[in-house]
Amino acid sequence: MRIFAAAIGLLMLASSAFALDAEGTVANVDPENLTITLENGQTYKLPSEMDVSAVEPGMDVILAYREVDNGEKQITDMLLPE
Image (cartoon, rainbow, N blue to C red; front, side, top):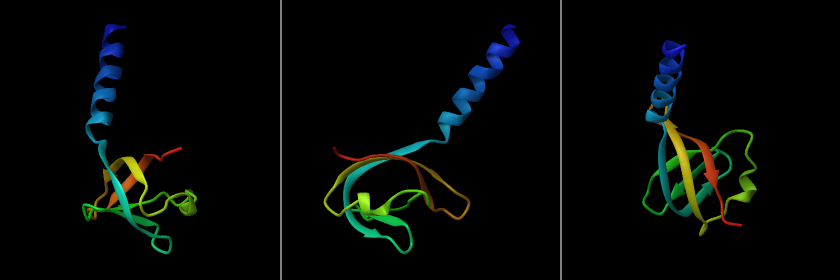
């Protein structure tokens, strides 16, 4: 049982090690390419199921993302202002 618990703990640590985060103000939204660019110049890919119209320039956002093989920053979670 202890081995199982240790394996679960290691998996949780490994999965969180790949999660990255960022925050900033949205400078540009590109609905055609499903990307947003923050004021710091970094561009992030939105999930295809997201309603792009909910994101507007000037919004402060907090992002969780992962980098995929081609270096693209794929958003996995986003906190928008209410």
